[in-house]
Length: 254
Image (cartoon, rainbow, N blue to C red; front, top):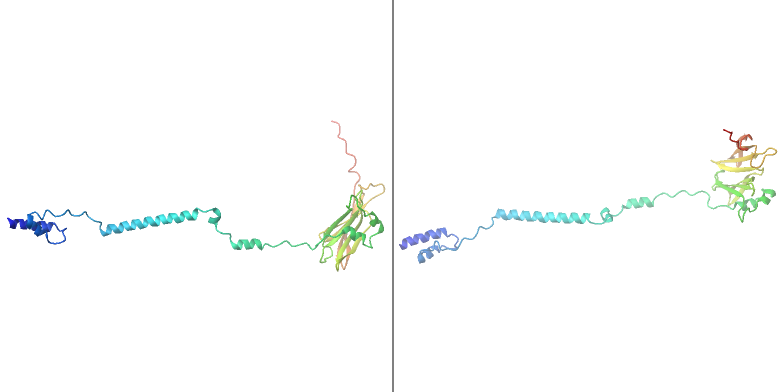
């Protein structure tokens, strides 16, 4: 029977491969039940393929979390930070915008002083040139290019205080730091203007009995600067009708 027990123990040895040595037979010899009395087999452990798969899943989860974190940082800032700094070329373009070309006239002239100091102006005009209110003189001043000089020419019209009638028109041209009288009209009523590089002088024509506010016509003369002087180029005459502008026409009875 010991032999059978030995064989049984051998069988238990074969079935108890979880032991570390081939001592199962000895155990079987001692009690006849060593084959079946071995320790419980451990549970099945993870296979290499399963472990690798879990590692891949873990790595993917970490990468996804990192991507979400970076995206949140990129879009969660203020508008100025998201937009980034202004382009330097845009700032340079704004700073390099061209400046407006200044006029040839650097300073306003004292028109009253020009007329009073001008020896060519008649004594009558100088006598009439006086303030109308406080220190306001009845002069109209225009600046423009009439003679092609480096500085704008000055056109001065002297008027009366009451009716604003032109009693003298003068053109001054800058020459070597001072202004020179290059044109004048002292046949009232007259008025000089600058029109697209031309000097235009308008004279009111009065017939006997015409009020100051209602002349009979006007003569318009256009002058052009040639050979250091003004030359008349055009002249037109207009006669006004006295049939209109009088008393209003009464409304007829219905």
